[in-house]
Image 1 (cartoon, rainbow, N blue to C red):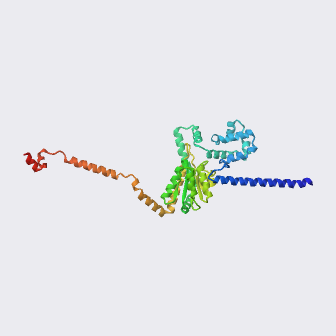
Image 2 (cartoon, rainbow, N blue to C red):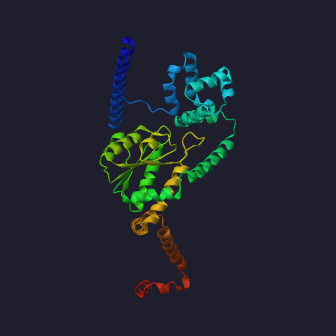
Image 3 (cartoon, rainbow, N blue to C red):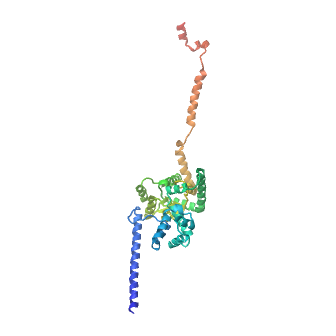
Length: 371
């Protein structure tokens, strides 16, 4: 009876301890989230982890040292492994196929195909210009083949965009832009060109939009001025740049609606924005391809222009009037050339003076003095 009575006491103590641990974990999560939202700084910030990295970190307790080194090496060299079968991967690392499969299962994957899919997603999200160029340089292609391959991928990106972003989705975003008091577009590094293009096009159609450039501090100050009636559009791809993600977090903290343009539903932009589009930037070059994102932006311009045609025409008419002096006009140059040619023709038409009529061109007074 004493043992039976003691068990509930021990169980209750454990339950209390678990509740305390859970409360502590929730407190840590809130603190970490607050530190992340606080201008993206804080000692508790962790690097953004992919799904595969998260599984690996959580499954460390189930892996011995040799399996842990194996999985870590596979992840760190994802660009060389993501396309390999389990047999080819085992041959590459000098182990048997069963070792690969069992190690993958210890991470929580039922099948190797699921692990391979996450490994590819990890490679895409962690890709850098160096790793991209390194992977492309190992392919046995001529320069012409690389160029043709680039064209093929661009066409594939556009086709994927049409299947992922519908016309209705474009119209919904255009209507949201109409309701926004102010639109701020944030993009950095290569994506800065996209943010400038989007903001400039919206202003041309009569929208109140801007694309802040410069330091992270300048962008954060611009975001601080936004309110619940405004809209923040964030553009970033892959692992996503810190300054862009911080702008989204700050905007959400201030109650600002956010929209993202990114290349996967697993990126930080897709996770933190209220809604988003995915447009692939895959390309064998040293940087991403912006063919699909630009096509998405152009489609948005079309929707915005035709949703409010009178406002668009008014803004474009005024821009046309203000910009006439900016365009090249050959009329002034042609007129000056014509005037110059006319003068030359006038002088040339007089020709040499005929000696027989020379006296007629001399005044009579001078002729009398000479005589």
